[in-house]
Every structure is written in C-alpha cells, then in structure tokens.
Length: 435
Image 1 (cartoon, rainbow, N blue to C red):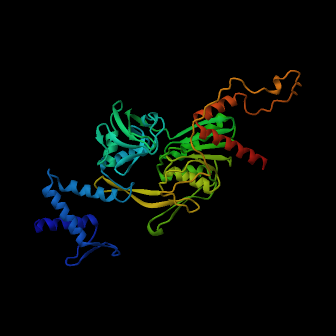
Image 2: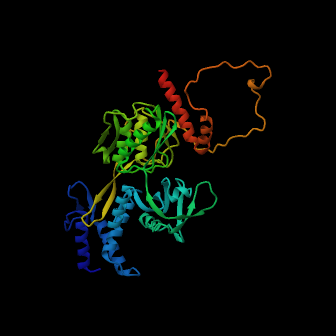
Image 3: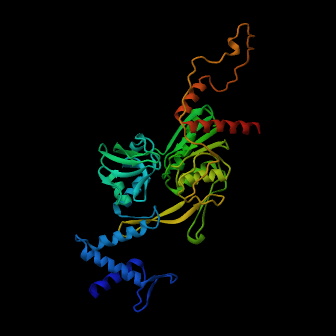
C-alpha cells in the first residue's frame, strides 16, 4: 500500500469521524476531547479497506466500501439502528404515512433470519396466518441468511398481484413450512371500532401512525353515536400492534388520561431525560377500560399499556408484550441518506424499563380455541316438571337483549381473549356503579 493512498484514507476517515489528526500521537481526539479513537484501530481499518479494494475478486469502488462499513457499524449496535440510503429513507417515510406496497408484515433481523414482529390486520400476511415470532428463512429460492434486513424487505416488496414464497420456521413445529403470498397495496387503517354490546365499545389500534391520536378521538365519537349514549366501558386492543411513533403513543394514552405522566425517555448514563405529560380531559369520562396485549405488542403499544397500567386507568390483560423499550432517532444526512440510531430508553410512569422485559399483564390470559359442547339430552329443569308452580310475572328490566347469549357464544369461539376482556369490563362497570 503506497503512502499516498494511506494518507488519503486517513484524511477521508478524519472527515467522516469528525476528528482532528495529530501526527506522531497514538490517538485521535474527538471534538469534545473526552473520548479518544486509537490510531492503531484506524490504521487497521484503512488497511482492510485497501486490501479489499485491491484483492477482492471483483472491482469495488471506495464509496460502496465506506457505505458497507457504516452499515455494519450501525447494525452491530442493536437490532434497530441502521443506515438508510435515500430510497430506504423515503420508504420509511411512506411506511409511517400508512400506505405502501408489499405483504403487510412488521419484521426485524434475528440471528441472521427475518423475525416476524407482527402481521398487520387485513393484509396478505395476516390472512395467510403468519404469527409473531415466526422466522422467515427463505424468500422464494433465496436463503435469508446473509441478507441484510433492507435486502430482505426489498425482496418482499413488489408489484401488487405478484407472488412470493416464504419458508417459515415456527416454534413447536418439527419442520419449516412454505406459504405463498400475493403482494397487495397495503393501506393500513390504524383504528377499528365496534359496539360489542349496548354500552360496551371496542377499539383496535393496528399501528401508531402520525394521526393515531386524532383518529382515536374520531372513533370514540362514532362509538358514542352508534351506542346512542356514553359508553359504560371500553376494550382497547393492542395485540399484534408492532408500534410506530412515540408521539402517536403519547397522544393515544392522553386521550384516556386526565393528568399525569405518560412516559419518559432517558439517554446514555441517565442524561437528557424528557417527560411526556397528559393534558386535562378524558374522552371516555372515566369509564372502565381493559387493554389487550400479547407478544406482538411492541414499542408504542407498550408505552400506552404501561402508562394506563401505572396510572391505574385500565386493567391490562393477555400475555407479556414484546419488550422493545428503546427510542430511535432518524438523522438525515446532507447526501439524502439517513441513519436510524437508538438514542434513548423509555420508561413507564413508575420508572419501569420495558427493554427486553415487556409489559406483564395484570391478568394473564392465553389465547385458546373454545367450541360449544352439544348435549343430546339436556338436564331436566323445574319448568319441565308436571304440576309445577307458574312463574310470577315481572317487569321488563331493559337489560341485555335475549339474543346476547347467542352473540356471546359467537364471540367466545371467535376470540376468547376478547370475550373474557368484555366479561372483566362488565364486572368493573358493575363494581364502579355500586361504589
């Protein structure tokens, strides 16, 4: 390696690192002078770059080498830090807006494979039955091992109507299985709502996008209108919600909190604490709440669940959440590229860190399949006995309609966790009214 090339690399690296080069010293000092970069490590890095440039089997330009080095540096920090070129940066902005093309699946890299965090409702991935925790090991005939997360995501994206085969490894299954998905335009509706029973509402949030807070307020107003009066209670469903924007999570929790801390973030060594407080006003007027979570509830979902749990605003039901308790900051670069860097951890109002721990539900409740047991001969009732006393006439109470039993039977079979959440909500409402 000639001295001219060596010196050129040192100048380039000095500019990249934002450091001043002091000839004859064993270190490079940063701008603040508090940390130092060993000169031997810089020499080693430059030596590797030169060796690759000169001896790799195919020609490769310096820009590509530097970009790959930066990608490796960021991806080695944690699963969520990344280098985004201009197209990837634009794609991330599209995803945040809630409309994009692909399969409708939130993923991250784990041990060289693509791990499913959560499928998005009403998308090809959700309809095919993909589950949180599934590992994608092949995309068509291409092994995922060796691909970057961005490479894998780009392969899953494509023109609507085209197909892709995913080879899935699922826990508790003996062998991988193949699922063929047809790509579609993913237009995520982040808020879904319905009246479960008179007085009891249901809201599901699928992602925390820019307008999640406003969309939630609109959904609650429509629920009140459909219910023809204020709600007696609400189930907030955050299952399989992979998260989204921190600000959106704060806005959603604020809809139900009249005051108090929602979440706080803290950077390295406890520096730069930032508190996010709720503003006065509770759109639900203090009515009881149950929040549903599971292993696919991540990031912003955990902020909301943790805030409502710590502030004793809601009962959290389900299974332990994913455990992503870190904040990523997107830093645009002059080139049009960007870096996504983990800059802080977030904490619930009571100071709990969610990172790698998740939110523990107040009432653990596993998802199960329930079916009605058909009885050939039912038990004999008093009303069937000969010579029985006639029942006394009583006024109609105006309670739950007679068909509620049938509706409950449908709900318990379709979604046992939601069925139990509704029962808990009824109990909380009854207890509140008696108090």
